[in-house]
Length: 440
Ligand code: ASP
View (cartoon, rainbow, N blue to C red):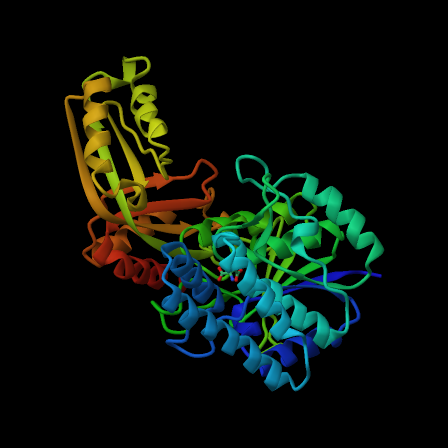
């Protein structure tokens, strides 16, 4: 039988009634045999996700603030016991919460603490569906660098071969020290993708609260176009740049097996959603641009040196400085006598920017080094742009007409994206101008 893996995100697990709707979706299709869940998310604007509450519990525990721990953990308790009440049967929630509280108090650490949202949510979903619960610690493995290990698939294949249906908590696995380790935030999408690959699914359905992947953030453009189909690569580019429907790393497990991902809406299950596939069948008859997304808070460090082009090792020296500080860069646009490094502001706090600029000056002796802080990167993405003459002319004309100063330009080698750096406060205007040019 063909297998579908369904992953339900936080809003699809937010309360008892939505969990019941999600379970109906699973039951409506025999092929939906494996279910991966997130922790309960926000029920309304201003609500707090269970994962955020759990991180706050962990902080309080580490600071030894017993009152804050009590108060926050009681909110976690209330979320799960309400869900149990809404579903209307004993799902073993109290025992699971007691066990989690005991372990957290005994110092199980932040990753264990954060993972309990998914753990208890999966227990609930397994009980509602009447199918076995399989803990992610039984097969998701990280290596010594904290990267997902291939052992994961060997273990997962063994387990799922013996279990034709199961519910699995997303977001975590086991680190090399034998302790629970989480993915980065939103990593439940990666867990779903791992299960899809392990069971050789024909489709990985990612159930969320939107009807697909939009060409642009709906908070910036009112009702943007929904993209019916995009490639893994386009998805990665757009989600890395801030389109937060799906975790940008979630394509890797399914990519080599060519398993398509479908984004579907738990609240409108009849909507077609978006398919993410190896090679999009959309042709140039469609739009040359697939989507536009932006991310704020970067710094550009620019270095100038006459004859930089013929000085062997100049770039290496500059990069050795950021390597030494454990900093990675996003882009490295360069000219004959100039190079720039685009770095996430998060790496440069508490004097780090000043220190690395000084070290670059000492090691590489540039004629001039200067920084431009608080830059937003805006990516225009689409396979259709390749070999399509005039695309960048349209893009830059639109930016000029919107009176937007472009601080940096970078184009990926496969012509899949054009990235511009603009001042943070022009980020949304920039996205609006590009969307307006290509989609209106
Ligand atoms: N619950 C986790 C988070 O809020 C992981 C996930 O939902 O995928 O980041």
